[in-house]
Image (tube, rainbow, N blue to C red; front, side, top):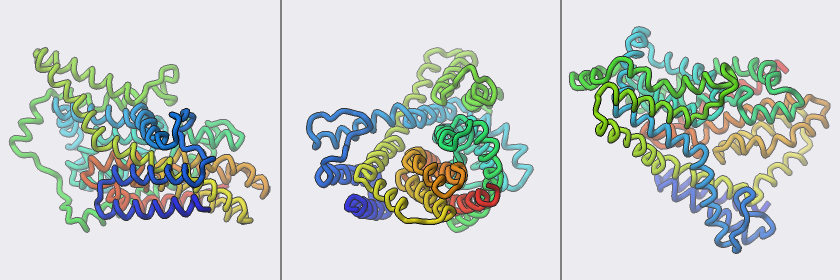
Length: 456
């Protein structure tokens, strides 16, 4: 109980500072340190180490070593994806490949004369892609490079386009997703069966509702913020820049996403293509094209430095925030707050339907607070089979909404890696992005719960 109270107080104070425009990285890092320090002082039996890392010898230094391990983990994982995608995007801009791709796509899309319809359909397209691209951040960064500039040129605001892309991994679906595999295991079935027979029937309805809500909320917020919906016309200078690159350069920005899709469980299963690997391959092919077109070895090599500079900028602005958010989230769990919540749920004595809703809400709230759908689902999923069995219900009827909500909570979390990443392109704070994803997110959650009860 004490750990829960301390965690809530620290969380409220941290949120207050962030809302008042204090530097979020520093606020979250200090809040995480406070929670870890409180754990070490009041609960000496509780580990404050990062994962299975061994103590450095003194708890006082373990707190700072925790930040070091988080930095190591994040840079090697989601941080590297964000940095590589940022470097690739900057390099595509540098060689004018992004301009060439936008020019190719913009003409037929402009004929539709409905940028917000394209925005809504873009969500459905991205959600389907998430089946093959399991990384939420990886998918978002690929779409920021390819689809984001098209939406902006069509007249959608940068914040609206970024928020939609941040929601493309709203539901973690498919055999390639870790939480879906764990959910299938907890439910006692194969991943493919769980995906086809349980996830898809619910996901179809959720996607339609979320797409409609994205359409209306994007229009509302853009109008509220004074955004004028008009296709951006190019100046003579911009046209000259666009024509500076050969037409075939328009294919370069989509090379990474094509590689990830082709070498996935959907097509070629024998080869596994990581998002970062795909980015590097795409950048290398672009360098070769620069050498062949411009025939300037020194200039092409110098231009490729933009790739590494872009990676550095993403570390400064995005990955640093991701690391500080991770320290805070881990500190929240270290206090025992999550253990208290789980124990309270178990002792509540609720009915199966009510219990399913409570467990689902706990996963969603935890994902929103910590920014990690995986951590939230892993924390609660082991309880579901026993709870469902005690009511004579099937495990999957409780597991499914919990597993889907894990991704949904991430989409409305200002400390989630994917939200932080897209906010940079949206030129706004993660909280502004969450303002735009909140209504579609809640609508999607309610639709998912209703469909789960009706269908299963």
